Length: 282
Figure 1 (tube, rainbow, N blue to C red):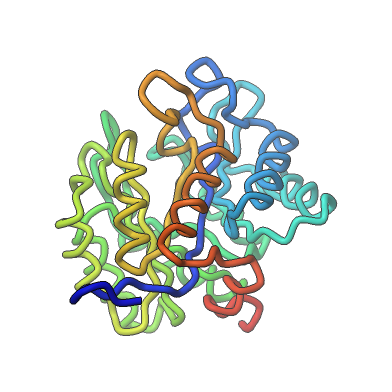
Figure 2 (cartoon, rainbow, N blue to C red):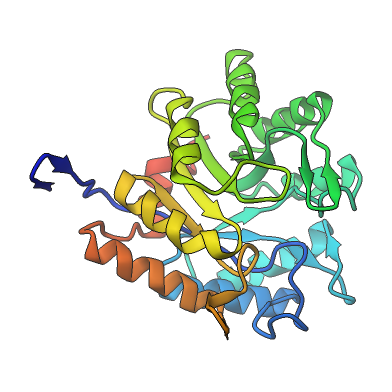
């Protein structure tokens, strides 16, 4: 579609829902799902309003982050039993320094279709989120062995540079799925200028999505829709719908779906997303 001299993308948009994360609590927002049953029900509800991918973190009985593969497996079983086709993207983040490297890699053995691949170390609020070269090499090897597509999470341009090195070494293989996480205290600022810079670093043919932290979530999502990218939304990154009004995950997904429709970009189904990202072909 062309208006004047500006061309707007008309291809489908992949919506990822990051429903839980490592830090939001029910005390902050009662809609944050924390048990396998709650997370699975939320994944199904988000899929019904437009999410193709569900980015999954797990919590223990005290709402603390856990990498327990049993909880990941239980959540996936519940989603599948409900008849939902959403793609499960299991986190290997481990709560930014609260889990060991071995614990973080545990969910990969479940062979999820996608798992997060945090492509470098970064200050993370008051913590340091360490992703050493040795950890990334081993994580890539395990993902390749289990047929898992890495979601290459980049908090700043140096992480894209790390990914390019791993691509050159054959540890990260196409198709490439990048997730830009902008606005973390210690990472890149949540600006369109920064987003554009990181997009320009990508290898040819790479697919990209963006999530903004806090109040940056909606503006960056809208920018990605206009720029031909994909969007992550959800309570992991932002617990508010608007100032003074707490959000739910399906609310946030439905808003992005409506905005995509206004721009003439159909929302990608899970089947279309699997085709675009080559899932099930490894």
